[in-house]
Amino acid sequence: MIINTEDDIIRLVREDDWMMDVLHTAQALQLPDWWVCAGFVRSKLWDTLHGYRARTPLSDVDVIYYDAGNMEEAEEKKCEQRLRIARPSIPWSVKNQARMHLVSDAPPYSSSVDAMSKFPETATALGLTIDERGRLVLAAPCGIEDVLRMAVKPTPFFEASDERIRYYKARLAKKNWESRWPKIHISSPRESYGL
Image 1 (cartoon, rainbow, N blue to C red):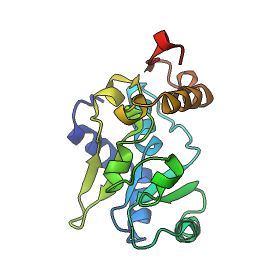
Image 2 (cartoon, one colour; image 1 turned 180 degrees about the horizontal axis):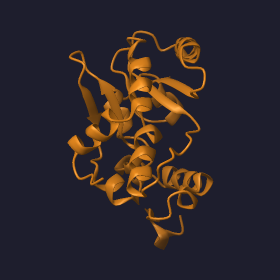
Image 3 (cartoon, rainbow, N blue to C red; image 1 turned 180 degrees about the vertical axis):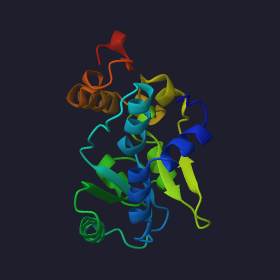
């Protein structure tokens, strides 16, 4: 399958019954500004671009939302529990992006999409939601070019800080994505600085 545009990505996801079930299950929580994001989207694209028929298992399925009115971590855990009851075979992770800047030592995020733009890699800064009209919506605050070219590089937010670049490099070493997707190309920023 050829994937060149956001519409192509949406069509690919819409044809995937498992992904649509995940999205409908997350939608049932009725969270504000909710998205299923990161590896959920990226892995599907890279599996497809590699011609894999079997889905790469996900260590978690990230559901994010934005609710500045209730930033208690306990609320996230309640949401995870509800999702686990609905679909126990899925490794759910729920995070309210209104509080995650505290964990990430960053300025407050203004929305879930703003938070996605601050994820470590551009190829992971992707999310899907279902809008009030039932349409599948893709958020790609750093664009789709890198994920489709299978290029792994830091988001501008991560590239702007030496500490975050070190985290980015350690994360990539731990993930070892190239063992699963050998066609990806990992950029190594700031090599000349030894970071």
